[in-house]
Image (cartoon, rainbow, N blue to C red):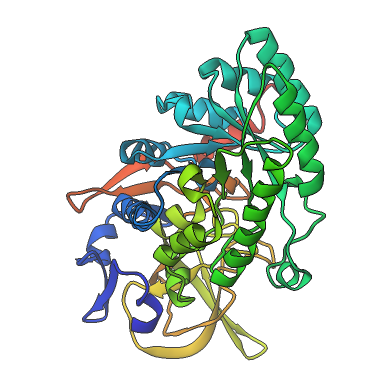
Length: 424
């Protein structure tokens, strides 16, 4: 167990009991029914400050924007605002969330490949100076038309697909056929169009090519290309003021495991971008900030053996712990009873993909045991669904070491009635 949680600084075992910031988790959750998520605001803050402080040691100008799509819980947006984080949004829903959180739209980036006229108009009414990442000429034409009608000149940044080696694309599972971004040569037409417009201000270039990134070698190659690309734009009189490096950083425990240094990351930017002192660097982390800021608490309902394999089934499933390709959930017991037979963990859904961890656990498990699922803050709540079960509640561990309900579970009676509404 010690090895498994060694990269989670807030977790430890004392007398075989799991402790969270020196508080026995059993004591925290003894009166709460599973399953539920536990949000750790202090961890969210620590992750942000670690990134901010590392970047500030080398970069003269930068801003960090939290990717709302990773987890749009209201409490997180309020915490992000309090910390001084901006927001990266992608839809009308997220625009309205930002408005509800009373965010300054000076501090918001609008992303996405298919923004509607309603979304763009709503966004620009909040702040005519706000940033928009664009991906197509059609989108630029639409933004220009709206801007002309509103007599404003919004800032636009073009999201490109960079030129990387075939080896890197294969290793990083990057595809040129991705729907996101536009090829870097075609992007120059977008920059020229925006430059010639009286209602658009081209300010930057944006790149985001993957998630769960933890390779300094990858960033060396990406930054080399970005620097040369900016120089090629200057040759056609496109002056880049901002470089948006997107998000994609892996959770802190993965960065620790892969020997990835945030300070070295900042150093790479300084080394690779010749004019870094004149550029504003923007970052849009989601998974890095929120993944390990959440824990799911769950209980073992049943165990069985089949074909020589042991299974334990818990009361949280893939409808909440969404089985994305890059999800890295780890499971540990609240009370460690010792080593046991290797056991696979599954949720309660009648789906073969309802598997909690890819690897079997090797600790002893029995009915009614409580387990903690780690690294479950990113793309769980925001992509969860009512598949056969209500979505679980969310509690917050506050500064007093107490749990506070910040989002109730779905009301199962209401779920039933909604399916029969307007039928009687």
